[in-house]
Image (cartoon, rainbow, N blue to C red; front, side, top):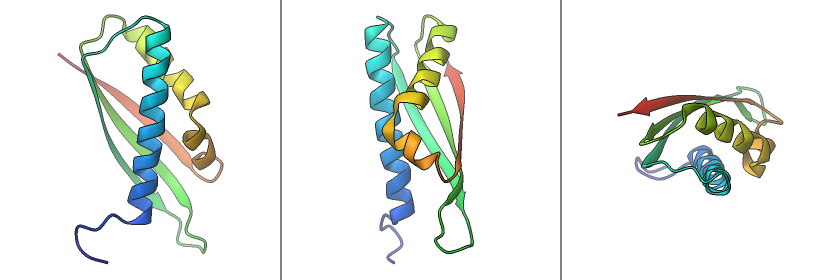
Amino acid sequence: MLPHQASPYKLLQAALISCFHSTFLEIIEKKRLSVESVSYHSSGFKRDEIPATIETLHMDIHVKGIQNKVAVEKSFELASKVCSVYSTISQVGTITYTIHYLD
């Protein structure tokens, strides 16, 4: 594999973040909340056994410009329950996330 080529594992992480983020945006729109920006960084580990499914995956979520932390946290929690890719991956591995608030 070339050094800067996207691996299937990285593409799966990107699919998770894409689904999770779009679901989150739909939720906050329905709740009439707003955020200035949201960014994600993911990391994780695969099992050594074959097939090498995801064992753990963690997302660091950086949120800027919010009005209500509790409502945003509940929106992320709901997104984790509604996002189809999150649901699919969580069948084989553990997904966690941490929300970081930026000024």
